[in-house]
View 1: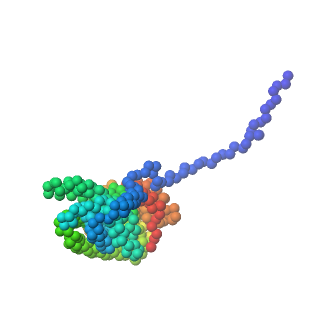
View 2: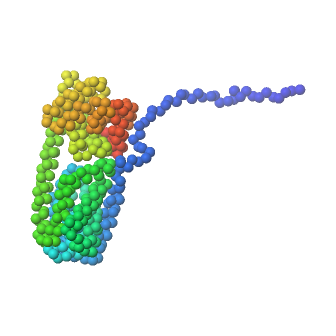
View 3: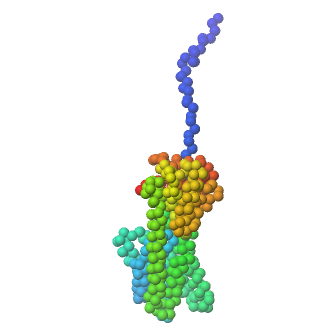
Length: 450
């Protein structure tokens, strides 16, 4: 009896087993794109929405003015000339400064004015927006011809702010509310209207921030500016309206002169600050001239440090101290007998880094610069948990710039990964995260040398 046929040998017909090589663990790349959007890394309101709202308001007001006709033309012409003069004398100031304080004051005054030498005025919010917009466009033409900055954001802010102020004031004036109240109540009402209008303008300016700063930081910077020229602009606009109601249109040139003088003083102040910064930048380039650091290193570190500082909420004088300290963070290398190869101080032992930082702080103190700048330079090599925020930013950005420059084309991501893996004792995690956000908004590009 024959048994079952033997089965063919499976091993002879089976596919040869391929031994998979051991998979190497992929290096964990430090992604600068977070799964959830950080509301602090972008404006709370998209700039295009602000532009669209301003365009709709402008078109609606222009159509309403053309339909009903221009009333009180001499008053409209006088305030329009006031705004044109303000636009012709505007200048490109620093963030948070009013580029056209005289034009802003004239626009606010026309939105609030209720009478002309005792004669009641009947123009509504639509005519106020239309006259201000036409005057702003006319006064901004020379800026555009000279290749000035785009005025789209400026016009959007002007239209929406004037529309807001006129929409709040004109209905109250039509009902006779201000005239029925006492002097104290009228003054309080004007203060409230000014505060709301200033807040509206600050919110719009923060949303339209061209540097793509976090909304909170940009808003704080705008609100801080209200304590300076912003308060003068609001007060001039609020006082000009009742002055015209009592004295007529002759009050416009009277209130125009003080603000022009204040604007001239601001221009001189800006010129002095620019000269001071150029002096510090020239001092910082001494390390490049001596061959201690690569060309443009201090400038690149300063520019990136300022953006990281803005992302972390620094404004005003704190941001200026950060910029000056970043420009002169390597000044201590001038005191070294043997230069550091390539000026790369981030790879030196901690004791050597502290010695160079202390030498740099001593040099900065001899220059007469703010003592806080010297303190930041001295403490840039301290452990991260004991450093001030400005020193943490300078140390992190300097290490990133040196690492990314050595790494070549793939430098930004690898440099960020190296900073993250180094640990919180050397580089503060919140500063590394802010640096990643700033670089992601700029496309992870390292500033060009030179």
